[in-house]
Image 1 (cartoon, rainbow, N blue to C red):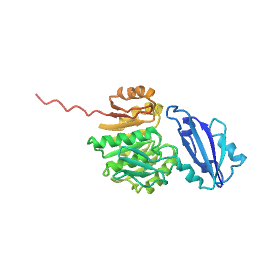
Image 2: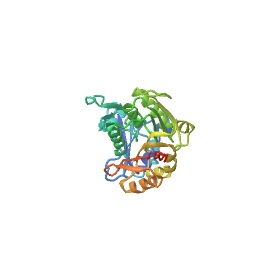
Image 3: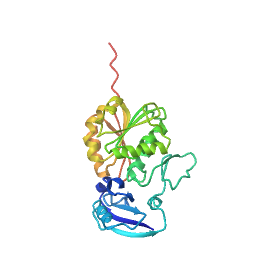
Image 4: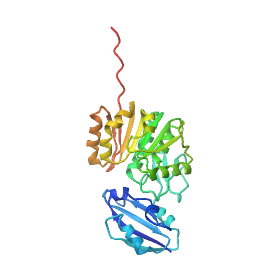
Length: 300
């Protein structure tokens, strides 16, 4: 018999959700974080799916992850991982189709990626990830071309994979501060047949805090940077991103609320990087561009 335990949490607690194997010994549950109401962006839920009745010790461990009372329910005879994935429908964003292993049929001509629903961020379910996919799609349709791409805070690796699908001759590096996320992205690259390595058409995966990595330094400057993180880190990283963004390069930023968009854009505009698109909604995606230097004046 399968069981589901649910508790309320904040967005910050959802983002900090560890891998189940880090908390539970033996038969660990599947942990899923979701945002039931986008209109309440700080009110999330954590679901834990067990293939056995959770023990008192397991419930105590779960209670440390959130901020509300635990609600346990028996689900009946089923695979608890399947149950954790069944509520997440596929996402269509631009030409991209993001689905869990439960939903493999794809619309005609869609670029499909399979991302495990047990991963809280970067599955395409949240408006920030879907918005970044739409921004990438729009840039390619407008004729943009990129050869050297960085995905900072990659999570599942989805945005790096999408960029390579649109610009298959590009080099791409995807980094995350969390080493577990890097391994998750590596697994997802295998599932989605994305080549991992240093060459064109490959994604290079690495752990990094912001852009503090010798691999990022060696690859810079980038003509496209994708950063789906949070407003505070985006503002703090403005000087660093400005230093590694190539002249004429494009920056896609997300993870910020609409009320934070102006302050975030201002931090970059102060460095000469221009806001060219402010996406809609509660979680807008910002597209900015580094100007190209003016050509030298002709000799008299």
